[in-house]
Amino acid sequence: MDDLGALQAMAVPYELELTAEEWSTLSTFLDLLTEANSRMNLTRIVEREDAWRRHVLDSLTLLPFIEAAGARHLLDLGSGGGFPGIPLAICRPDLPVTLLEATGKKARYLAETATSLGLDHVTVLSERAETLGSPDGGGRGAWDVVTARAVGGLPVLLELALPLVSDGGALLAIKGERAEQEIAEAGQALRTLKATIEITRRTPTGTIVVARRTGPIARQWPRRPGEPARAPIGGVPRDQR
Ligand code: SAH
Image (tube, rainbow, N blue to C red):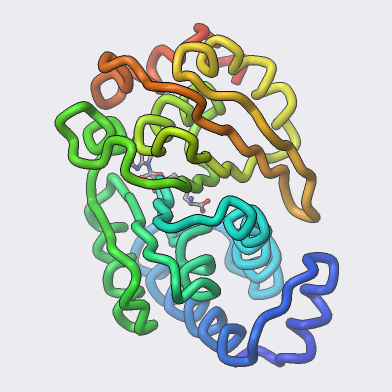
């Protein structure tokens, strides 16, 4: 277990109020990630303080937005090593959390990790967002909040995520320095997929972008697996993303 006082000091700029038990579970989670990372490629951030800041605390910047949305079911799209989904699940034991991860090996790691941590309210789906969100995919409009970090530029992410969001629900994306530029490039995707950017907020480690769904999405979206990234809506060339 990491030193609790040091963690609380590190978390001051994040205005988090966590219990000792939550800190302890988050610490165990980082241990499990580090162990699994020696077997598969989950993260390049290995130094402990860096991992706390750029993975755990960064993930938890979404907590007030999840609270404000009154989330009832949350899906984390492209969880990878478990961010932001697992830290959020640790701090919201009352909220059903689904982790969606296309790579089977990573999905198995996520399921084992959730079990080890005793997170009974976490479900892992090993599937592509394009399939799950298609008209026969079983997940269309099924979550009132979808979170995502580091899953494509905003126009691509909107096509992957918004079909999974219920009408009136929201996508909470953690973006980086280029958030404003990505939003500027996402105008056509927002019009096509019936959503608006409601909030952008800088945090100590990123920029949170909240996209709200405002109407029904035509059946043709999302396109088949791979298409959203290959030819993003609005046609932003790859070298400019
Ligand atoms: N969210 C994590 C991982 C980011 S890497 C973090 O911030 O650390 C992006 C992850 O999304 C990868 O694990 C990749 O396998 C997954 N992914 C990419 N496209 C996807 C899709 N269309 N459907 C589901 N998962 C996808």
